[in-house]
Image 1 (cartoon, rainbow, N blue to C red):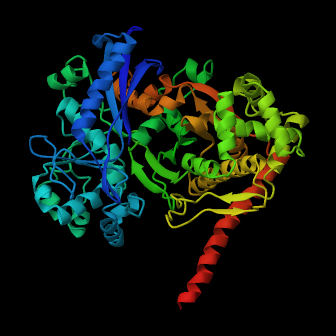
Image 2 (image 1 turned 135 degrees about the vertical axis):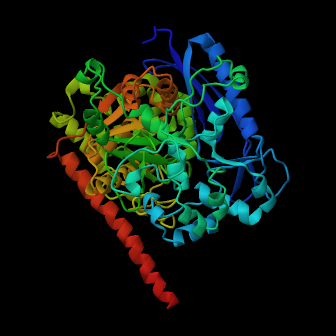
Length: 629
């Protein structure tokens, strides 16, 4: 083991910015730096970026974070990269090849993940019903790489011929760092249909690390990409590696100079950003626990622990990651993917299409939002914190008028408001009470009074479709129970009902996963605002009926996961799960109320309404279809 002056760098390339962070061996962020990047959007559904700009931003950010942290480059023992699942196109010399039909500039050589130009190609690939799609979610998205590559062949033939390397963005970053063209299993399995396990062809389970047997020539030929097969797969990757595998000889001389690090610094095989967020939180353990005292090296023990934990990466949308030792097929859920997140384990990936974005939409479109925004600004609080306070007031005095609510906000200082919120919602942690199963009658009654506010107000949160478990982008949102009230009280109630709807969406997914063979007992949550909203955490734990675990510095989970890739590549940790345990700690655990509590029964009833609303929407559609007969 190295001394205390051992650090690892994690780089997270998101849609709008590059973030670099430097972490110690306990996984604590020492310093970070963020730099914005551009997106070219010249037509609807066309979104492009530049690999040159992104790499320049990565190099600048890493140099800056080292400078800000006052850490010598020699103390950095490994580096890892995570990025969006975007397609990078390079020529034989590793130079950009343009992907835009609207200009001839090679500068724009990335088809961004959210680009939907290849919708038709994705539908044609799905229509083949090829057996590989069984391990690919059964439905190909235009955000995946194969339809994008096919679109280029069919629409930009000259550029298609010039491309020597089709790479996911995270693989491009390791290519720039090491000049290795080895692809990570993570993106090729999840986004390109690569079969990483022999179990997908036989009954054995063996990880492929050094050949091309994972590409299925019949799939590529059937969808119109037979050239990739004839060329021996050289353009999409002839070597793959599990996440965190050391690449080549570490940082090459050119990259080391650009990044401000030492030549030969170990570089780990990369990951898609959401998956890196999963590994950044799933290993979190409590300080002082038996797990911390004896970081287990027992593979069976670690596997069981990870199988019980669902990663919930919450942001604009929400991604859910469930691991298993055997492949589990879940209708409407992507995967199972082998070694896509945790080596030698299978991954089921689901999600909610709009979560943070939906909450923002509901709140900002209410007629009282300008007033809410003004009051929040005056108190130097977030608008959601103020809405939590309104709910707190109404739970104590259900007959308060909107004028009384506003007066109470104006007469209470922000410190007092924050203190009351901390005491009212999700205040109990494992260290304090071993859960809320032993809540007092007053606590339960207070929770029930909060819930009574939405007794007759229900929301179906599919405003932007459903990603899982229905996998239906055409679904839309529904609200039942609207009245004529348009006061700040009605805004608070709508906000609470929307929070609950998002929780029921998560509960539905957990239920479907467990019904199909998963064994989820804990939710591990990361994601900035959602992970710090105590009212949401309380509703989430109570509605699902399992503990919600909040790791320390969870908002930096993706960068931490990337740093773990570097730590494993450096051999500082003997295995990926060991790094996950050592570099992530628990900040708080929110426990649900008891199985027999009235709060639990209330959520059970509202969940039944939630499911019924979906059925009703389908019934409405079927009724309207009769008009076309």
